[in-house]
Length: 79
Image 1 (cartoon, rainbow, N blue to C red):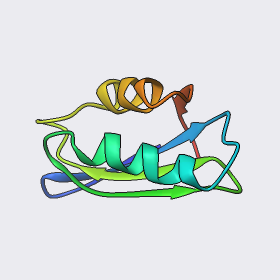
Image 2: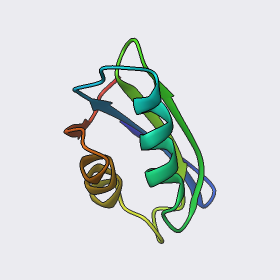
Image 3: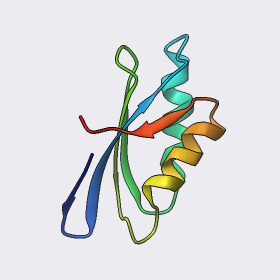
């Protein structure tokens, strides 16, 4: 799911393969380095990744790729 406010977009993703809470920091660090990302929140229990970003600088596909590089498969989520 993606919602837009001004130049900022809030996208929701589902990631799999979390084994410990340190996975959260790994994803937040990797995604947070992308240009235009203002906020990243990873929910360990649900595998939900919430990202506030500028879509002109970073697309949902680039965020999915960054989560994948951290070691976790992810998809854009509807909720």
